[in-house]
Image 1 (cartoon, rainbow, N blue to C red):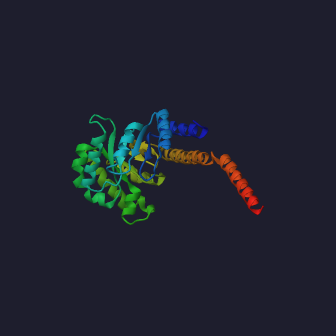
Image 2 (image 1 turned 45 degrees about the vertical axis):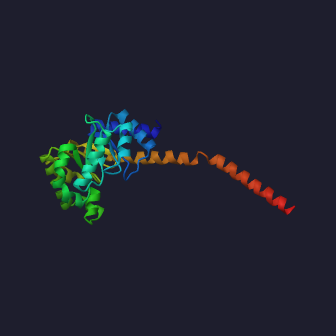
Image 3 (image 1 turned 45 degrees about the horizontal axis):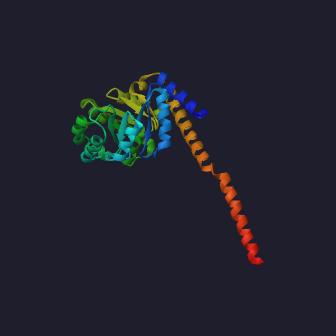
Length: 269
């Protein structure tokens, strides 16, 4: 591990011990996590004794599910599952790739108005086959034609509360994501009074009880610092790869230029 990764590990351990951090998250979907990035994240999770959540590329992303078995993941999340049929495709893909006695948990993302409208029809299958729902507040807000900044408005919180009630009634876990920042504390505490098992920033997942703890603000700041260090470390990694052949490129350019000069001299002669 390099110095940045050691700092990141310290942040994760601090989050685990002080602020209720229980897992870190990667995405094959919107974030487009590459295999080498995922391996670095897995090592950090292993060293920090944290779980790993992985969002796959779609409801029927069988290749992603097979990869998740190789890498290891505690939570698998399927995005953009808007209908009972899409949910059944996710269940079928899970059954094709994971044994019945797997201890990995499977959840689906509720992130659009369409999914909320279809939720009652989806609950029987979710209750029978899956473990929970992840409410993606950013995409849900945008799906209503609202700006991203409306994420903590009353109508969005009311929508999450409706899902929290459904999760409580159907013994499903509820995870809330989508721009979780200090400003979200009032909404999260209200949701917690109904049901909130976990909440997440882009890469850090907290136990739901952390929203009631006095260290909430410090915990979010620690998560933001981790995510910034992750992006900086990622940039430095790929910059090093981009420049690793630079000396040879310059040598070949010099050779090419010399060959061109020789050709011009022979033509002139």
